[in-house]
Every structure is written in structure tokens, then in C-alpha cells.
Image 1 (tube, rainbow, N blue to C red):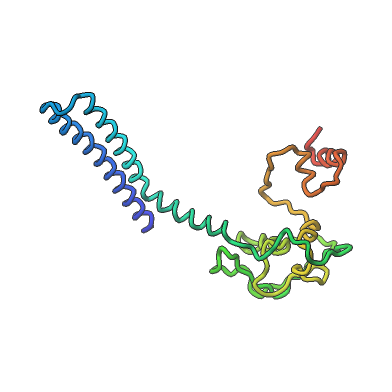
Image 2: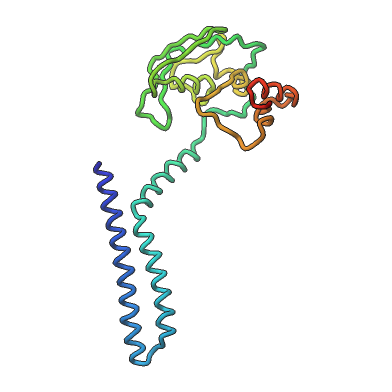
Length: 227
């Protein structure tokens, strides 16, 4: 509430100051110009040339002043975005190091996991959280928004590592598995799908470099994406 009032006051002052500058420029140009023409020191052509130059300059300054409150928000947003861009992940997604299992059964175990998002260090998502997910079973995580359902998926795919505790697949900690192999074993369908700027066939072939076009057409027909 106080922040909104303060922002409104700054915006109102900027708009008032910009309007004042604009009208003062009008008055000053015509007053000084009239004096110069009367004394023969200038012509109407030169007066209007200077007038338009000053008016456009004042207009630019007034527009900038009116957006003073927005510029502060933009600076704060840019700072947070640049900090995120400059952040270096501790997880190397291009590394081929680690174990590749011949077959993944799918037994998942989260053991005494504690986790906070790096961007929200004051919010404790998991504290000593333990969960076992057996293979070949349908398992559902149900809870209100913000309870950590999506966080479990993010940790399983190693978008993040837990602050403490371990997460294992078939008895092997995820950190010891090859990351690209681990993610190849999973399929994720989010509630808000992301559409890439490409054909449906190309989208079905993502991460499946050896998939034939016939196989892709089959999946499209199965999903009612092609008649």
C-alpha cells in the first residue's frame, strides 16, 4: 500500500514537472523571440527554428520525467534478470560423466531431503522430507499450490540438487548417474505445454534422432493430431 502511494506521488510529480517544463519552454521561446525580432537581432524564421528545437528537447525531457517511477522498476528488474543470467549452475547438463544403467526399473527414493530454491532462500520447501516411489506403480502427488509437487519433479530431473539428503534411482544416487541418460529415462507432460516454432513431426522427433518419419506419423495419429 505504502509502496503504491509512494510510486503514485513520484509519477504525479514527474508528470507535473514535465508539463511545467513544456509550457515554460513555450512561454520563454515566444517572449525572448519577440524581443529579438523587435530589436532586429533575429528573424521569425530563426525564432521558430530555435523554438521547435527547444520544444522537442523539452518534450523528450518531460516524457523521461513522467516515467521516473517506471525507470526505477526497470532498473530493479534488470538487476535481478542479469543476476540470474550470470548465475553459474553447479550441475553440468552437458557432462557425460557418471553411471548409465543397463535397465532402469524405476524405484525412486527421497531420503531426508532438505531444499530451498536458490532464488527464494527464505522459503523452506522441504525439511527432512522422505518419500519412496516403487517401480511399475501409478503414484500421485496431491496437494495445494506451493506444497512442493513440482519441486519433486525438478529434483528428480536434477534441475536442482537438494541442500541435504539424497535422491536415488534403483539404489544409486542421482548425482552419480549420467545426467543426459537420467533425463532420457523420463517423460514430462506439464499442465502448460510449450509449443516450439516447428512442425508437429519435428516436435515428436526431439531427442529421438533415430526415429523414422513413419513412427512419428503413427504417434500423431494416436494423438489425433493428424487425420
